[in-house]
Length: 85
Image 1 (spheres, one colour):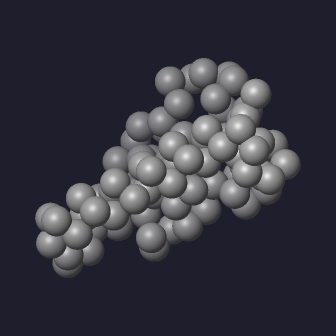
Image 2 (tube, helix red, strand yellow):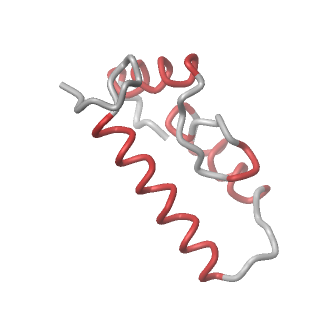
Image 3 (cartoon, one colour):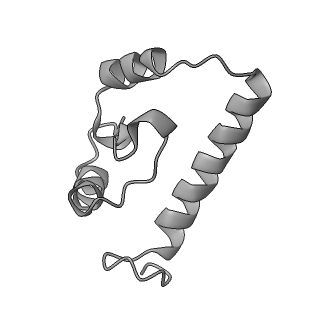
């Protein structure tokens, strides 16, 4: 879900093409919620439901958010782990 922000879409599309999109759902690594419409994101979330505890889902969500935040903050276009400018 990208709110039709062209800068966000362009940046995420570059990550997607490089295969460096952080995983939001374990079952669909490489899928980018930022490139999806709201409807696509809802359907993906509904279809990826597993028989796990609420605590496990919370932990997985926090790990994905941390990974995404670290990725957004410290990775450059080259993916070398340097602070983005």
